[in-house]
Image (tube, rainbow, N blue to C red; front, side):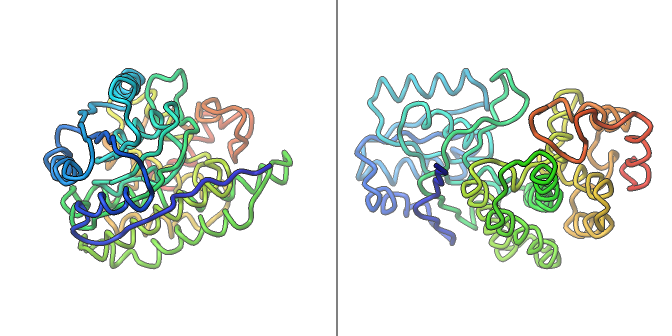
Length: 346
């Protein structure tokens, strides 16, 4: 049996804070709602959404400070204590990830209301929680609805939008890794999910000149692509269509670098290197990232080249069960340094 869970509604437009009420009513989500937000995202949109919902629902709010199990447990306690029927996550990756895992464990639906477009977690079933005993993501459930307010997302620093491009362009190497695992390990492969994922990556390459403007149209292009990535993962039943060796490299950097960059920024740089290893046109990927103002080397990431090399040599250990271009033994230090130098990453 292959289970595909997808968002029931996706709203993309302007001034959508008040639409949450209508979505919740249409989906019959119940009377008690909990709004999750961060200290900043409460001011950006959380408070307005809470106030709007308060006219029709029994609502409470909770400030989430990081994507940790402690915050997931705190959310679960509030869900139990107040008999909450559904959640809405107003924020970036951390807040959406906490809502995702808490709603999964409590067996209630959640709505995703992203305030940035920096990665594909806004519509996927995967949650990255820091102290789960794993350096990668865990399977939860996708949001029942995604409400993407272009005006709200546009208020976030442009850097986040460029990071979203990095996360999407990584689909090019992620799908190559998936095809490799299918051929060598006999792993399940979905052509439909892979095609949808690749389409998102090709769209950002095609629309790089529009995205770099940082206007409403730019946000729409990136958000549509990120939602498509989430849907591709839901169809595949795993993160395979959008997560390969470039993501393992990013997770390795998170583990060893004193000050990691944004997820999408690291993944974008990782994609340049993995594209080189796959024999793809890595220069085109680097050119697109440069065009949208995303980092393409260690200096722009703010990470010492030594950590880049080390991350490349340990990346294969992050998820040993996930076969990628790195193989089961990974890269030697010499091979890692060579790849990083040839691609201009160091």
